[in-house]
Length: 381
Image (cartoon, rainbow, N blue to C red; front, side, top):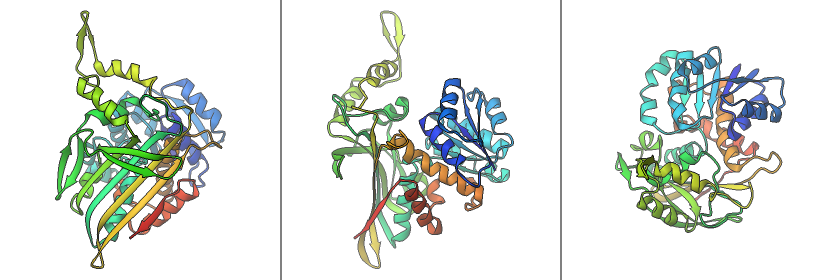
């Protein structure tokens, strides 16, 4: 089987390494527009299976050329390249596992085209969206009647520093969207938009995390796929206490707006300026990070009120010098790609991960995550 990994940032490098170890993958091509990124990837992943290819992936023709002849691809790309990658994969008749979960409705419209091409396209197959999605789906599946599903996730620094107590572990442009976009959720079988930074909740995770807080953020595909199966569903993002209030003030004052303002005759984007100023302030005391997940589904089972909860506290991988966010985001995508290559996943079309990792595939997938160092605990009461 011939696999392609689109993007060789930290997550892409991790996925390249995982696929190179797979007995069902014969060849892995790592693709990026930056030669330095490719060189770093090839120096870190020492395998005769792996080759590098420099390509301008923002060009749709180049994207298609890269995927021609490949059996499966994993997209570790910016949000802007997610939909073009899916369109190219369908045209190339190549399965695609995509880490980006945004614009699910647009992607779902390509379902029939993907089926006709005989390929599976999986959007949002990381940690959130990704792991959180299929945990929520499993809880709903196990209950006779599901009242509420709450997906909580966050990537936070192991050693937080003031003033924001946060550390950028993926693209800053994606982070800033959390503070300004209305959040997609589901209530009473309908899609709803909730205000950004709403639903502030204090919560506690085991050490070394401790006290945190979370606000409602976009639920991505699950709002569409699970809205008819649960009365209320939403997602929250975790930060250390005090972070959301400070970022909320910046948003309220307009510093995160995208519409340019004139400064001494020069148009300036407040958000771009904020990105330049904030990036240096969004650092921890080291490269070490923590990823936390808590998915809670409540309802009735056997006529009794039942609560099902999955928890994860994942730490920086010192052995591989790998951030927890890269590990927990890339591992589900790598497993899914391998399962597709081996024929364990038969679905075709544009199919969200919560529609795949349920039923008989749920326990084996969670066990495989555990084997690779992503440990998820479960309680029922």
